Image (cartoon, rainbow, N blue to C red):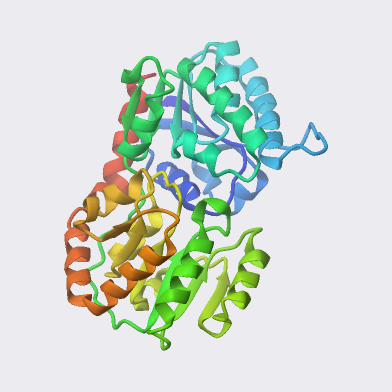
Length: 365
């Protein structure tokens, strides 16, 4: 008889974590799953395989960030649902972990949380330092009450070890992200590509400045930026100021990024921090060499500490430009590095990693 699992994900948004959630549900054979999430989850998740409980806005507080409000409302929903259940439901929280932990402290249920970011760097590079500091303090206190913690990279695990008294609670399970290894080879065009939300974490400002330096001697190349976010206007102004408007293309949100990755000459990641960096996995799988900032966690693991791609210091436009130029001028070397990284991509295959997820959850049941 299957065990009972509650997946807690209050605010369903487009991105890498959502794919992880979808893959867990698709490959599940061991649990009766209840998903607690927002209305938008209905468009992406196969509800025939699970029970779905929608998080609605029962509480509205002015000037409070929507993510915090969704956590509060999801906490109310989870508490209400657990009122009618015994303690045989385990909770796996993939977002708003503090809220889920509080609910389990009240109800006595076991909880395993997923942490995908470095909490310290998330605070240092946040848009709102006040709320981020409050969030950091709450994590520092409440994460210690979790029964288990899954991180998606060894770098993320090490960052959490500063918070957690019992470090044995933390385990690394790479994202169940990749459906299959791609063996096709494609002709590459003269453009660079990056994929990610237009927010402070991704540091597109450094990338645009690096592309400015790069394009002085490589005027035939363009830069494609895939992603949406509140910094778009600011970044477009920077593009105007650098006089590279004709060579930078903002594509916005793109659901299927594969056609772009297949043709791109290089993939560039300029983030100041990452949990893992699923976009690097996609790029490698499409035989697109990667240049990434060495941002304290997943990218260095994916790129095998530089053996599978190029790593540069964060917030260093000239160094980033120099490495991009080197990669283009030594493209056969860049392709060899990509081949080395690709041989290790089975670490991120969906079936292998979902089995690890479910075995870990069963261990804490």
